[in-house]
Length: 123
Length: 123
DNA sequence: AGTTTATGTTTACACGTGTAAATGATCGCG
DNA sequence: CGCGATCATTTACACGTGTAAACATAAACT
Picture 1: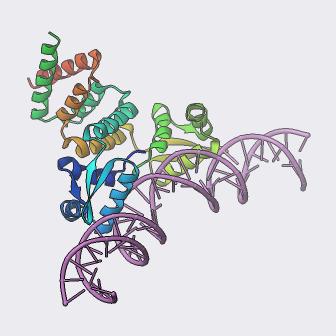
Picture 2: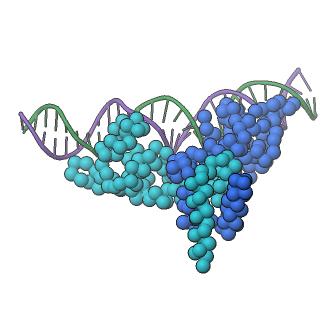
């Protein structure tokens, strides 16, 4: 089953660094999200059930490690959106942002570089 | 409130052509989604409550018209994803698909053209 | 006028989600 | 050994979602 948005916030902490204890996760995410301890614990348990993280005992507590990689998650999410909204094609998506003037100079420069590299690989 | 995925399917029909009756919507979407009449009616009612569509009486039935535009919806959805996963920037998103080899020749050609056009406008 | 038919409206129900309190288990201390 | 602190696990609860049955209403037909 897919992981929810709140669950993804917890995953984000683990993607930055793992393994981590529930306490450490709370310390990082609690202030920002305004979550209580119980909330983080619940989310961790759901992630365990979904096999998105692994828990390893460390004395009295557990250390959590991601099983689902960030790449997998990003892949799922962005493919979903792409398919639903842009017929599965990337160019229309970029065109959309372009029309909305949401391409920064930096974006444009990077895209240009990216295309250049694709050209080069091409041989 | 945001419209759900099932609701978006109904909106899609209306975005292609509107106004439309519930029956017409069902005819178009029922076979594909394997939905019953009641399902479509429920979704339409939720869309009404969310002010995403407008209903206008036409004799015995209603004709539904979108109030939320496809552009608005696409904008919300894609901005959400972009912010959550790519720090709000487009280039990293494209880079992601590039790494996954999900850029078709056509995508690449179109992206190149797009960048060219941006250049031209630039004067 | 009474019944069928076509629509729309209300209600339902299981499941996921966000959020957390209540409860249980375990370790360290007095 | 019993008690408080520290974790984890279980339970809770309101709300949205997917899916649809049940019910209401009004027009159309006999």
